[in-house]
Image (cartoon, rainbow, N blue to C red):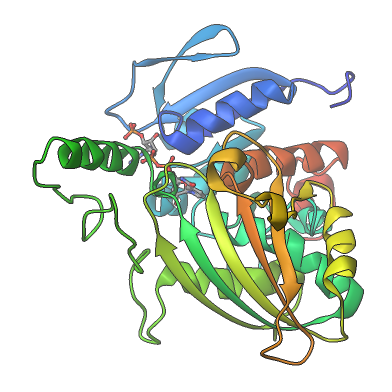
Length: 352
Ligand SMILES: NC(=O)c1ccc[n+]([C@@H]2O[C@H](COP(=O)([O-])OP(=O)(O)OC[C@H]3O[C@@H](n4cnc5c(N)ncnc54)[C@H](OP(=O)(O)O)[C@@H]3O)[C@@H](O)[C@H]2O)c1
């Protein structure tokens, strides 16, 4: 960030959660110009302390008044909290970068992946949405194909880690692994079945069309971010017993033909995307190697011979970092660099 940047008052809502804690860490790692850091969570956590950037900070309760004087509020406390408190924060002049599903598909709310559609930040009216973690790692790679040869159809199957569900799910996988080793029964609480040594094709609720809501988020959010409202997308979202990082098998039909070699070059040209594709030497993206990193890793790029102009590949990224916290902080950086921290109407522009 520019050294002249004015320090901002930044609130993190959900500061005790896995994403909230990662947000605090990333603000510090990227030297985001934070003057005051306000940590907020539920009333249950009020008064607890959290260490951030060498300081010990006390967590406050997320209530409307807590947003007085806040410039940027990073929300990561679930959809209900965002629905209730994001408008309260925005009313008080804060710009909310919201990590939940509450506002993503609102036409008046930009939905941004930092290296794909940062320009959409210009028209925000106090709330900017951060996409779902599975969408996040997919769209920068799809953008490369959209721009080079056009996109006709996308089929994606996800292998999603338990940290995508939050702190309780991490603890549940750990305790089920321990129970298995001890020869004890595995008790499921967070998921409908034990997740240890299992694969569960159910993420979020099921919709009337037979898809899960997680699958449908990938369909609708990808279209919005890529500005391709008619893109044909299908998805199966699956939870796997991995602690951190989501993996995705992607099959694409492009508008014009593209070879795997050309696709690798196009993918590698996207900021934050790393091509790792040497299968002979067992080099391809894997979850444990992507964990703790900000990049989106792509490999196993090959022609899909089952359709005309088909391409298949494998995409892996840390769902807590690029899939959630890193992109949220990158959006804040875009807003700051381009003078868009305040809502467009407060900047003297027309309302979106
Ligand atoms: N995990 C991911 O990879 C990921 C990716 C993208 C988006 N998200 C979204 O990020 C959000 C949080 O996810 P997480 O994984 O961090 O969950 P988590 O580990 O379960 O943490 C939830 C956080 O929300 C807070 N919270 C709960 N109820 C609250 C309330 N009524 N008022 C204020 N704060 C409240 C909790 O505070 P207490 O400790 O006080 O209960 C905690 O800080 C969810 O909307 C999720 O969909 C997660």
